[in-house]
Image (tube, helix red, strand yellow):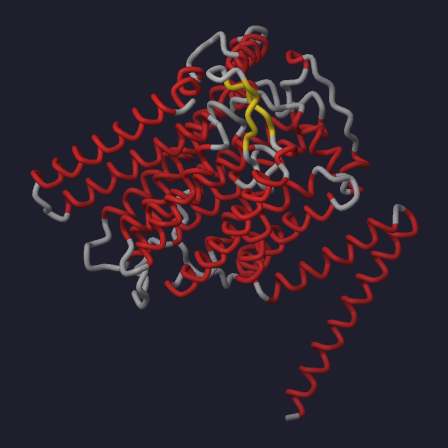
Length: 490
């Protein structure tokens, strides 16, 4: 009894000690920098303490709040609150991976991306040292490296069926909130929408963005959710399949009014690859080829009919043709980006890259961000600086910054994720747990859309799409062991 009392007193004493350190540190920030910095420091310390005690709930909070961060980041006053994301990710990484590793208590998880991540990290560090503007290079390296920490954290979170169901429920709730706010924007705040010119009707049309500040980012989020709904609809069991189907169909109008070619093409490509992967799985279950061929033909005819209707009766045809029209405004701008970025590169730079963030000079842009902005957490200034590196083509930017070597490293990473997602799907028998099949299908669909959308936008710089890539990659890697089947979804 005395030992228990002593342990409790020691725990209370440590809590008071850390609280005193937090108060002193925040007071220092408030006195010598700004009151806002001191207040946010207290908030970040409290969030880190809570995340350390409740890692699974902290991960759920990250999923729930992810749509809100983009809207907060553009504000000058409370934009610093978006650093909660960084605090959560770093705390989860230390709590779930770094500390157990140092104490030699890290449980076994199959890490299928260890080698690609190691190579990508080393090359990123080298390209950081070659950056012309070091601060901008640090920001670019942070975008690449921060979510890798989240990958290692999610890898060592619990992966039971009950936990996965809880995550899906909270992600669905967050999605509903985003959709409701999207409806509100469409009917009551249409002036906040991004406009696009409709060449068919010769009018400017609003593009829905909800909380995401840009319709393409909103569309990427919806495609991620639609791929999950499709995976549950195809591979799940019970009434949850019906719910997933209804939710997936309800996402289509929102995806349409983003008027983003990258989003539309990404959704179509994700659906096609998921369907092909599922047919492969059925073939391995010895389903008759005749039935598979008939099902594939019906699906192809239905998809072609829907696409033809959209092209004939809606502006979809005009927008899809514009995706490959070099005279279209955004395409012409992208071609100008490519010409200005690639033309001055030497053969050596084509192989090794110019350095992180080195896409400014050729695009006639300047960046005004300093170390004080990073230290003070000036999120708006930092975001504006990072936006100067956007070239609307992730793979072009990667080629310029990291060279052919960087493209090969990313290809290696994508190959490992896709191959293991497909393996996870194919090796699960018909009577086995459905969660591995769902995660495998989701990984295949998301990866296809992610890579395709990279030709239209800088996907590694788009939050939360970049975050979801590493989360899904971690789930694909972690769910390589049998999962107990105790729920309708499985």
